[in-house]
Length: 352
Image (cartoon, rainbow, N blue to C red):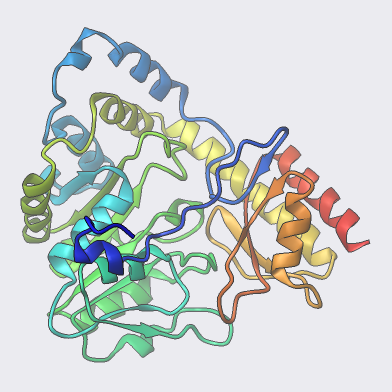
């Protein structure tokens, strides 16, 4: 602690990101990165844009990217907001749309940036417990509140909600903003973007980091009716008028335009998820039904921390959360066929 710190710094509990170590021959299954690289068209777009124009500021409105996303999702460009990764988009949503007199609702087991942002922006919250199967129960959210944010699929469980549940939730709270965080929706979930047309209180958040393999470029966006988007733009332009650089914008556009690459690699990952789930179940693991690019698994009789440590000793990283109800679970990102096979082989060695 420094005497020069502002009071807010003293009270912060920063988000802890997944480990990014420099370990030889590492199998990295702890941060839900895509095991395959980005679309070749995205890489070509970055190379082409790496020229003398980098001395110029990027388009502050990201007009072409918004138009590309709008066409892809069947909405208007002015219903799109883009930011430096979905985490920045979420920060603006917390500050501009979810801070009210009544408490903000979100699950007790969920993306750990939600409580971080709530503390940072001094937002009163009420966490809603997952049920005994670690699923979100929409009926539990039918209470007075200032807003709601849910990941769909949820993280770290990977369990998704049907679109009918989201529609019912949004309809039940017409006077509160409902934010749906769809970081993992491309791997088997149902997007809520089609509901935006009929619900002025719904905002849907997406990212290029997972299914588009552009985590290193930091591109996220939100879809909502114009008044909600305008609120985010007012915040953004009061904070940073240039959140997306030239390379990020062209890479994201090219990625959206390369649908074949997206579908092929998404389907490969879903197939690997099914294979890995079957292998772990055959070895006595409990596996939650996942619609994400990871699985949430535990081995009865084994502490999650001990399994994670044993895997790390074999240069395999998975994510362990030391918190109530899920301390024995491991979140395992889905890798390539070779990475999944290496994980299973290592577990056989550990369990033996």
